[in-house]
Image 1 (spheres, helix red, strand yellow):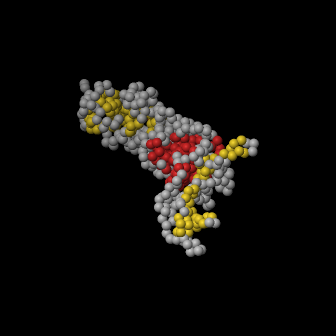
Image 2: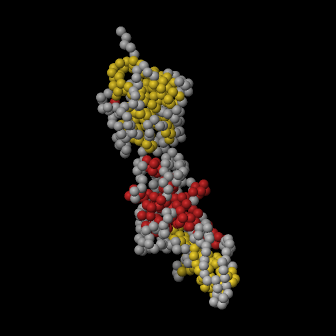
Image 3: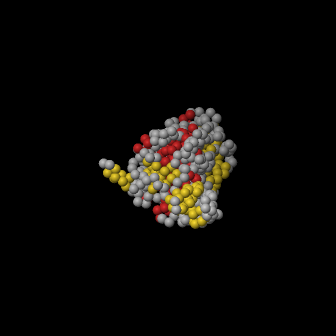
Length: 555
């Protein structure tokens, strides 16, 4: 509420103000004044309610007037909406007027419109002024009337919000335009209210008269409008169920453009940074709105990129995988590299844009990164650096049922431990998901003639095990315990040649991958070097038994 309330004494000579104040959030108020007139009788009291306080005011849109030689123009009339009680005769003590509402329908809509701004004021970070830096508060002014034909907008020529007749009481429209006004207050030159920074004026010039949240425009416009879209959806989360759904729109959403020039993507990113509701595969933040609000208040940001850089200057998170992932969910890629944990597979949707990952081997020996497609072929590339300029290897086996993988040897004298960066490139036609897993060989190597149990859940893609050879002839056997299991077996070996330290599935020493579910896969070969048995779980749940057997020499 925070509606201004005034008590007047009414007599034959007119009205005289007795007391004034502001209602609380529920509309309650208390006014105190002398109970007796000079003649000893009680006061004849009228209580009036006005859509105004020191922080915001709702005024009536002006009537149409004719300017000299300029035709018909609309000028605002500086009258707030006002309604009052009946005259209360001879009031000499306490009086409770009870619950009341405006009698006129327009006044009820005006009160609802006024209360929307009150909700924005309560939602924002606690401060005396809209601009937290102000020592003298600026008033947010709105103009509305039921018959207004003005286009709904915040205008900088008068620093005011103008609402079309149909937008009275519209939560999204009123809060959206209030966000524009507050941003302008926070970024304009404070000693001259008419001097606006480039943030609102220059950037705003690039916004089309009609702009859509799903369509690309300019990055400046997308920031201004995206921020203003975020505010009503943060104040009123239920609006997401009333046609303002931005968070669930991600890569591949039909009819939506991607990136920083799309206001709906900016709004979705801010919402996902803020709220605890996790949407889709990459929404991983829930920090609240305070950091976003602070950075907007203290920096004249013209684009989302400006905002993100300023956010870092303010000491807020701009680099963790959780915030970068949340931006990526909204098709804003600020260098996101999805972290993979050893032996924990993850599922991802079809790659309509490249999906970039990171993994960090910590144990000396072999590791493997593997991609298992579901109905749509997905390939794999492995890079040595975050910007993905140094390609180490790739696997692009054709087919929507073929598992691509790249193995690397980080044993002594081989590849270093540390960070590696897989990429799943944009896939071809299809809608199938894929599973990806980084597997690291356990510390204990395979020992000849001892079975090693390899448990696999349906989501598991790969496991890898170290062993060394010095030229002997060996057999490696992979035996599924369940008939539904379909496993492939690959053996990779590296030597002192650095070209053997990273190898895809085609560069194996031996493989067995043709017999299908429930079948035993077996390879026999001779090799020297640091070797790995790579177990690929194409489908199924259960345990495989892996056995290394040294073949006895024959005469």
